[in-house]
Length: 359
Ligand SMILES: *Cc1c(COP(=O)(O)O)cnc(C)c1O
Image (tube, rainbow, N blue to C red; front, side, top):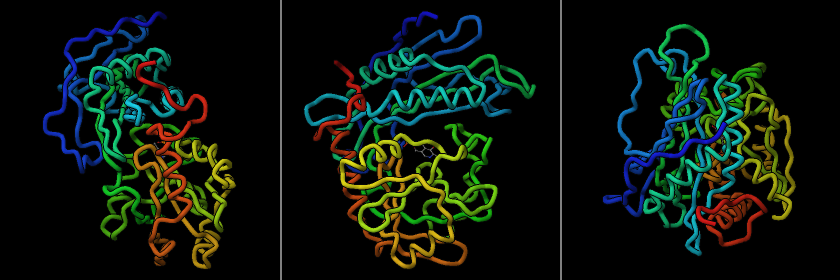
């Protein structure tokens, strides 16, 4: 089906009261959004860029009752030579379509999605922050909007794209975070939706995260649902463990873990940085032992938001474990530098990882 033109209803804007420091994550939004509509006869149509206001949604819309909804999180960077670059955007857009298929939703052709993002970012390019650690976070979302209370896939959908200028995810850059290993709750099961970036996964994770917060921990590390024994991931980030000085071990993709683009990037960069990388079945009991003895020297989480989030403190059952004296380790530092040097164009990037706004 031919892609319809984008109707630009309002003009781009510039931020007026945006702080240069302390942007936070997902606190500020540009004025414009992109939206398009789907129905089986017309495919994706009514492609518009317009001022962000309320969405036109009936209370009977399927999203409120069955929760067919997916999203992505992509970053664009203001590079040192003045160009704007999207990091591995095609990987993100392909994963968006995989999430769509899992959730019985229509896919979006890559050129449709890419054109929408590029047009929107081009109009709002004054919002792209240039300070170190900052980026323009791009949040595509698809929701079911057919009016029905029947429990079935919707026939109609809405796709929208938000832009948010963001700073470092955890405030002041590379600072170790604390992680509570959940034994009572699970995030996802094999055969379920853990592999998809679908909104319900996050709803399912909130209670455990709130409980962990009350206990003084920032994030939850999830174990597998069947045995509550094998390490899976953090709620919005994948996890890795450093053995000795150079070996990085991460849980293999079991079907209930979100296949992160950052995780994949680190896997692909490891060898050139002098690291070995393996995907393993990581037993929590063995891991706790390896942490106690110091066989594991560093723990870090990885995702588009934080890029690398070193873990300084873990709690499993009643035991609290301190990692690397709660300091940022050399492997985390090196990976963070390697990735951010690519993001900001300070070093060359593997082929196809960067897409520029203007060629
Ligand atoms: C988005 C996300 C990740 C990280 O994926 P990236 O592509 O690296 O941003 C990891 N786990 C979950 C549950 C996620 O939603």
